Length: 519
Image (tube, rainbow, N blue to C red; front, side):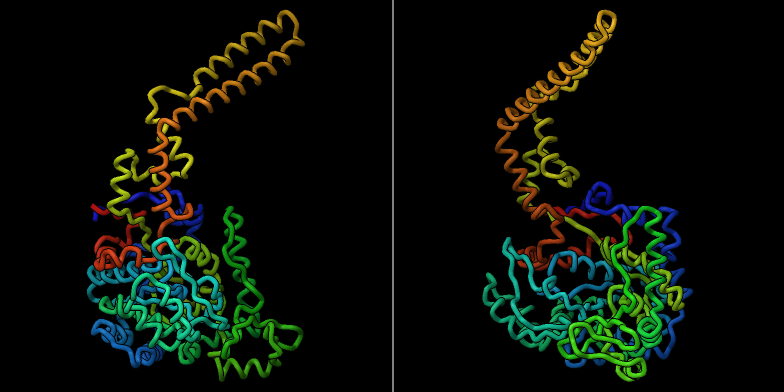
């Protein structure tokens, strides 16, 4: 594959806060500690004091979570290394989208793996472990129940409720039968996994276990027990909401918009198939949409004895992650990194190190067929990121035999009418309004002529314009980025070395947009 790179500005798909963060705009420096360079991560490492007792709980939980799974030597070694004070993690998180969901999920995992490799090479005295944090407690099933393969959308239908990681995957058989070919990687995972979290661990372990990637499930009592201080402060004292509001207001004063909104209590109650918000009404704590409630004394006892029934929302999930991992960087997409910037004051309050916010790798895969079509119509890869209308106008203008743009004529016309106005002013000033009106009518006529000329020119290039539409739809399905729509199987099934190619080509600390072009 040939590799080309564009700046994020050239890729034309990123919000201003993300672009300003990547550009290290000084106004944003108070919202994070270190920018994610390899040197910046080592600066964090030297300040990161992660206790031996937490390491012991983490390593034991990870070993327990992998019980019954076939582990590579790299995975076994990395679990053991978590006990060492010289070991640190690079983490990404994602929902449990079926069949891996959109392509950028794979890009996240590749980014954390490559980041740990580069750090180990630069700083061999330390150990760096790549971690995938499963959003197993999320309950937004509609966001994960589908994927797009070869232009068709496949959906898992089930009426299960609650945390998606606990969903039984046996009902996936009907969906598997609809697929165009058998996929042993997923068949084994979904038929033998038991629940969705186990199934995801199975296929991620099959795909990336050889790289030492660890999969962590936060739905774990020993890990939740490390978070009780925050639980008490948020549920009983509502300590986090004002901190996040103040942090967000500071961003908004700079002209940015917050992505997430804190609540008085930022935890769900999670038991069985229930995952519902906890609210407080007077002296009672209520679990919404249920008849479950607690007094303050009962809630205090529940936090102490059953921390596993509490599930953090988007405001506190990052803090939970950083509480239980010796983490240096979080790898995420633009929206994720933006909402992390809203949370630094919460980290400071609980004296928890704030990780470097590291953009994942972004990419567009251009297959050989699309490359040939691009070459045939003479478009550059940069032009691909124009919207369709602008791209076609640019093409027609470049390909036109005659200039159909009437800017010069309009300028001459305006100068002519200005001279008329000056002449009329000397004879009868009241005529200036009439002349201005005639000027506007004539400009409108020229606009219509220009449109006719453009339409005639477009008709000459109808075949090429249809090819451009086809290229755009292939590479930007639905008008969005390919990586947010297509599943990795679109590429992996035709090229079993696809993931290896990503590992070879992606540079984790090079914050530009990648184009991988088939030769």
